[in-house]
Image (cartoon, rainbow, N blue to C red; front, side, top):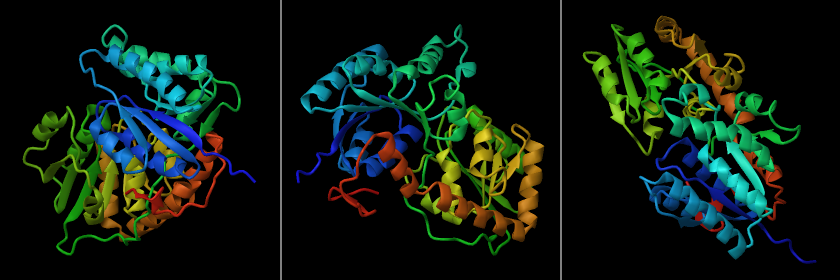
Length: 377
């Protein structure tokens, strides 16, 4: 009997900064490598190295930082060349402007999987003020019709796309935790200091300013903020004189999660499915999230974390005081969070769903620690 040849998939990401989409592609490489030969087209050297470490064959094109349209033109040409050169039949596309690549891909008869990582965000960028941000987001709303399959990373995102597309075209496959950490029982530091952690990009819509305001004047707390972004300087001014530490961007956030007593994700939205929220839950941390729809989704309506009124610093402060004073509540939330990750956001769950979405027949039973003989963290 002739053994079936593995599928060949080309993943495309033309973003110029490392973020959630890039971390997603690294994790997706692990999932798809069971039954596919993987290729990638990108512009960042760091992403190139991460994907190569997962056994992906990567082609990196110039950034063209001042001529973004040229970047996408070169990507379109490169996509078609690679598809013909390596007989690739499936294209996986990420990003707003990248949705324009669905047009040439379908014209050449390629199967396309378009992953949506968040809402359209059209309301965030008025067309008359920021047309270069508004137009790609508007295009992504309508060009999704050209995709063979649209994959949404949460039910919250899926609820936006399902009314726009034919039945069956939208699949919801939530983000997942690649490696579940060992269990950690919640506690407070022996010296009575409560270590509060926040991880994410320092942009205004992430709501870190609410957290700084919530801890103002609280005794016995230490807030650590991990991340970089354009809003950092304003946040540092707001935090002056408060027990707040800015740790900057960290490649390895594991030590911060393990040291923390409480995790807070105060985003104002929109959010698709924040990986930091899942990561904190996987570390068995009692969490406080803003009551965005996606946070209600991943916590079963607040069963696995406390939800505070979005944008309300006083309500966030009240929730923090409640957790600091109630060890039983911290233990309950930590246990429920860990179980939620095990049941819904484990890598094995995502693998089965993605193999189906990409129409891949598994060729072998893959060991979880090595892929094509290449270790991948």
